[in-house]
Length: 490
Image (cartoon, rainbow, N blue to C red; front, side, top):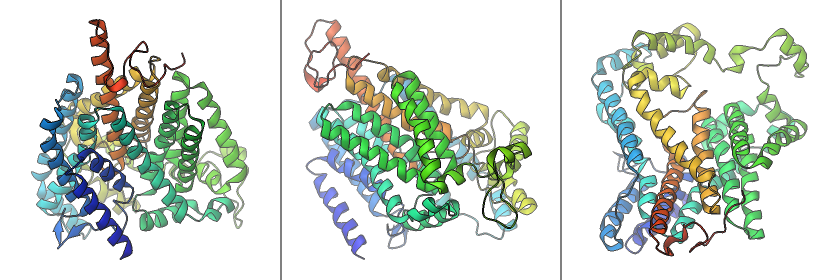
C-alpha cells in the first residue's frame, strides 16, 4: 500500500511538472521503467486494459511536448536514413500484426489444443502493436527535446539510472549465498526476480550486459575524479547484479560487447574480461557453475562436478548447453524454408503449431523461438527482416562514427554507450530476445534518441563552421570552438 501511494505521488508530481517542463517529466517517466514491471505496479485501473500510471503519464508528457514545441521552436530534424528505416520498421510490425489478426482461426485452434483461453482481438492489438510502438516514443521525445547540454545530462542520467536501479533491486532480492555457495542460481533467480523485480532474468542479464559498458563509457565524459569514480562504481554494481541473474547468454554478451569496444577504442576494457572471469571462477562458484552448465557432468550420487576437461572429452550436453534450443530450432528453420520470403505474420510460432508440437512431443514450452533473428524471419520473411536489420545497421554506423570521433569526449561517450546497449541486443538475440520493441529495450531506444541528437548537432555545427560562423550554442562543436568538453585522446 505504501509503495502504491509513493508511486501515485511520484507519477502525479511528474504530471503536474509537465506544465512547466515536459522534458523533466519525460526523464522521470523513463526512470519509472525500473519499477514498471514490478508486481505492485498497477496494470489497469477500474479494470480498463492499458489504463495504468505509466501509460497515463506518457500521454500527459506527449501532450506537454506537443504544446511546448512551438514555444521552444522545436523542428523535427531526424536524419533522413533513420526516418526511412524507422518507418519501414514500424510498417513491418503493422503488417505482421494484420496478418496475425487475419489468422484468428488458427489462434483459436492452437489455444484449444493446449486447453488455453484464446486471446481477444483487443488484447492482441494492444499487446502486439500499441505496446510495441509506445516503448519507442520516449526515445523519440528525448531526441526532439534534448537541445542543450543540461538536457543531455538529464536524459543520460535517466537512462543510466534505470539500469542502476534495476541492479540495486537484483542485489537486494537475490540471496548472495546462492552464488557464493554454488547453489541453483538458475531456478532461484527465475522465481525471485520475476516475483520481486518483474523482469525475466534472461532479459535482465541482457540489459545489464550492455548497461555496464554504457555506464563505463559515460564515465569518459567527466574528468572530475569523484564523478568518474561514482560512475565506475555504478558500472561494477550493475556487473555484479548481472552475475546474480544467472543469464548465461547475457554473460557471453557482456564479454563480446566489451571486446568490441576494446578493439575499436578502449584497449583497457579488453583486460577487464579475463580479469572478471578469473575473479568469478575463484570467488563466485554459483555463477561459474551456471556458465559451464552442460559442458560438465555431475558425478552420480554426488553434488560435486567432474573435471571440466574430462567432461569436454566426453562431449557437452547440447540440450543443457542450449536449454533445449537444439530441439526447437530445426523445426523453426524447416518452417521458414516453406515460406522464406514473406513468413507467416506475428506470433507465427504459436499459430503454425510449432509451439504445440514441441510441447506435445518433448514437453518443452517454446512460445517463441528463443532467437530474435529466427523469430523475425519466421514472422516476416526475408523481405520483412531486411528493413528491421537495416535500421540497426544505420544506428550502429552513426554510433560508431561518434565513438571514433576524437574531437569531443561527448561524441566518444555517447557513441560508446549506444554501441553497448544496441550491441547487447543484437548479440543476445542469437539465443533469446526479440526485435519487437518491449519494455526491456526502452533504455536502448532512449540512448538511441540521445545519440541521434548528438549526431545531428555535430553535423549542424560542422556545417556552420565550414561557412565561417563561430558556434557557441549547445557546445557540441569541433576544433575547441564553444566546447564544454575537451577533445578526446586519439
